[in-house]
Image (cartoon, rainbow, N blue to C red; front, side, top):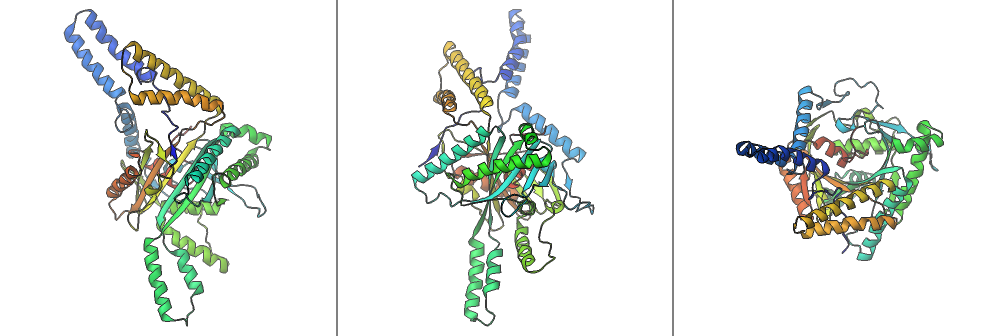
Length: 500
């Protein structure tokens, strides 16, 4: 059994687990109380002590992953967006204003996305889709990949795949260009489009009626039981890192495309090698727009497949999905779910357990419980540069040392979990010295169902699947739109990166 447990908290508090800002806030809140006590003003001291306790609860105590101040800021921003109508989205096509069909029209966190067609590359002279996010100042490429899976793999094979992923992240870190690598998987009940086409093209009209009936019944049974899985890998590069390299490659969009193509080649070599990908295909603009459309509306996939098949034999058939229609006609973020077209989605982050995660443990999260249900998740690996990794490690080690010294001086017993965290923090420096990369992975899972279904119930089913897999779910309230975009739409949206 391959278990991954080489992780620790991203930030270690310097004072008894508190950050510097939290400790300073508590000291400032306690200072008036101490002054009142020194002057023997007991009533005032008691009142100020209550204020101090209230401040401590607001600043220190987390509520579902956020402090009270964090919830206040998020709630205020969400309310302002609702009142001003900025969070409400209606596409230009739905309003009868599609000025340019190739201009991207997507909601929320995807508003700043622009898709460019890169220069021809490879023997087929394919123009890859280059994703530019103006809001976060990043560039990205997305590939559709296929993997044989690890369900039947032995322990040695799982170890090899895990080591291959670690080596891939180390390659990304050594490039000093790649910001993040995202692995996205979407699982949806099979619509039977490909099988229906195959049966229609191979069925003989004058064939035995019994064979026709058997095939039709098999089609009905298999379509209801089968599950289709789509996997994407997205490489994200920040403009601040890419600009200099692009200038040396000729500048402009072509210079950036050349650098991104070279990085894609390195990523593809790692994916096909030790990671074990059976196929890696970097997406063109029409392929990426179709993936976005089926992300927002899973039910549209069958129609797109039929149109692509008809376009092969009938000239003039418009099988591609224009970017002006790749998104939903309307979308509205709600506190606990995200509404888009005739679908609702609920997203939750997945917290890593202290005991470690078994390789392949996320697979049960992808299993739908109803025919119309779609499951998806993204596992993101933000890659830190070597200099930033060393600074963060040094800061974490200093925080662990100060916390241990304060506990020892105050004769506070150190808990087993705190000892393990301190040990892991000090071990990271050794791994960095040996050439390992430092990353801060996170995962987001999403369930999408038609609006005729009770989305709250399916959200609870998703949480149950996460818990059965050995993880703890945390609903991303007030940020459901961003969570949906990061876990379902393969355009490189990240929870670790905000607008700049």
